[in-house]
Amino acid sequence: MGSAKYTELGTFLRSRRSRIRPADVGLPAGPRRRVPGLRREEVAQLAGASVDYYNELERGAGSQPSEQMIAALARALRLTADERDYLYRLADRPVPAPGTAASHVHPGMLDLLQRMPSTPAQVITDLHVTLVQNPLAVALLGDQSGFRGPRASFVHRWFTEPDARRLYPEADHATQSRAFVADLRAAAARRDAKDTEATTMIRTLLHASPEFAALWADHDVAFRRDDRKRIRHPALGVVEVNCLNLFSEDGRQRLLWFTPALGTDSADLLDLLAVLGTQDVVESTS
Image (tube, rainbow, N blue to C red; front, top):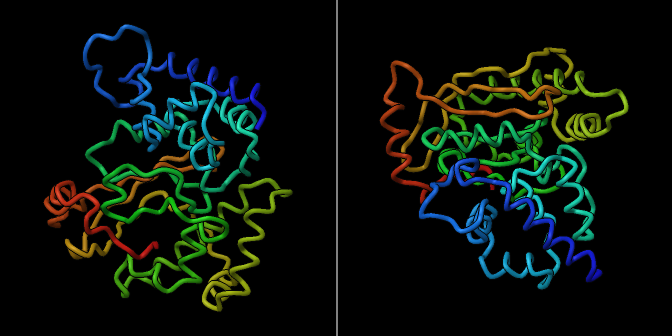
């Protein structure tokens, strides 16, 4: 990577860091600050990087950041889509295609997610690729950030990998399958006719899953705006929740959050989930 670009990358990171207040990203203001914006260690914390590594990036030194690290930094610094793309180019990395796990998260949704620390919540794409989760969502659903390629979509894994279905009780599988297919048809229809991401995924599933093919032939269409779900947790058992959705303006991203279902003990279970953390997370998405 060229030294001039690396120097500019460090300068750009410093400039974006200086414009963000701790409250903007859900951090306490802390003791009096000598300079505006976030501290280096705070950006490192938000991006899941070591402080030493982030310091090297700002100095224009160190190793070339990975695509995953660039995506994490873009989210930590609340970059716009144009700023995120610029950061990829400074790092000599290809700008990810829309819909991948490294997609730019809608800033408004990311802000809302940060303001929901007591509720499991995550941002996904319209093809059910998880972009970012808060800690309670990881504790409830498992860490879904490590998947790449077609497997990044939970719908793809649902119809091609039996282990993915352990997230829900077996009695609910047929209902979930039908809902996933109807939602995918609605999402695909909303996309531009030249878009190949959804059509490729549908074509793959039609060949890989007889169940998907049969449901697709029914032509059901319905976005998943709200659901009542039963989620299997290895330590807590079945947790019954309401799953609510907030859609971005273009429909490409959704903020999902989970609330206790009325008439159940799920409120107590979600409180316990906050205590357990991720030590016993669901492994069905791995």
